[in-house]
Structure formats: structure tokens, C-alpha cells
Length: 212
Image (cartoon, rainbow, N blue to C red; front, side, top):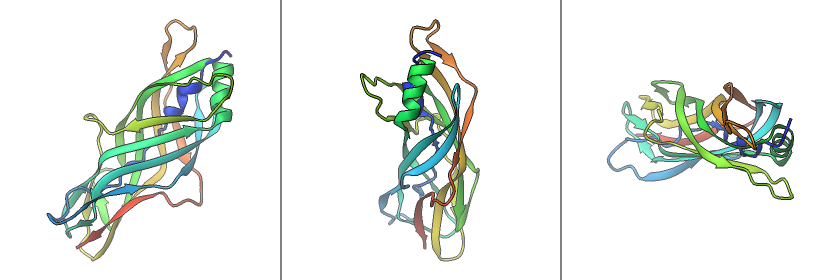
């Protein structure tokens, strides 16, 4: 293999994927205040192309209301995800595979409690073209993904009972990416989709809105 990977971290992602997406519950009552919803740093195991299993850390945030009327709908907006490829994975891909960049999309599984979703997958979370430039060291590679006009975010409907409407990331996300290879022709090469699975024992909640 040659030097290629640095930029791959974007998957994910989540990803990212991410994922990681179903947070800010959008419409709610007129009096609802917008707040930031966000996960903690979540650890995933990804099946990286050219490498196989490796770690990834995902952090997602979005904007949404602090309350939602019973039976009303809510949607996430301004989703942002940072999927950080650890230095050992980034360095190996860079040195042994020659991957120094990536671009693409992530589709993330999401779930709701206290309400329902019109879909359990957020799709086409954009991973903009990004590059890994390690220099003489191999730092982690933070890959950013975001909601844009082509991203589908599931709509949540609040239940009838008072309590929280909670949105969480669920189990896994899938990355569809092109890798950029050093000194290759063509430099950008499409990779097979790969999955990242949430490691056990974590709270993947993005956020909750109060049902009024």
C-alpha cells in the first residue's frame, strides 16, 4: 500500500456519522425557544475500506425547540457532525494506503422516545471535500459533515402523554465516500459503502423537547 488515508476520517460519518442527526425538534409551539441539542463524544467501530475495523469518535449537534405541543411535528435543522479518526488509523491509511482526503455522504439511523418518526434514517448528510496533512506527525483527523439542501432529516411527531420527546442516534451509520489518493490517476476513487457501529454502553441521545 502507499500513503493515502488522512482524509478518510470524514466518514463519519458518521457520519456519521455519521449521523447523528435527529436532535433539534423543529416546530412545536409558537412560544418554544430554540436551543442547541448535542450528543457527547460517542465511540464507534468502523469497517474502513483498505484497512478493516478501526475506531471513530462522533459528536453531533443541531438546533431545535425546547418544547413541542402534543401531537405536533418537529424537525431538526442546522445539523453538524464531527467524526474524528484517531491518529493510529489516520496514520496507517496515509502511510500504507496513500489516502489523503475524502468526500461523500453519510446515512445515520435514528430513534425516538415519547413520539414517532416518519423514518428511522437520516440520509445524505454531506461530507465536504477534506484533506489530511500530517506533516512529520500523525494527529487525529477530524472530519466535518453537515446538513445541506439535499439532506433528509426525519420528522418527529410528539405523543399525547406529557413528558420528553427524545431523539437519539441508533446503532449505526453508513458512509458513501470517494477517497483521494496521493499520486494516483484518477486521484479521487469511489469506495464501497462502509458501516460504523456504535460501541456498547453509551447514551446516544441527541436531545429532548418537553411535550406540552
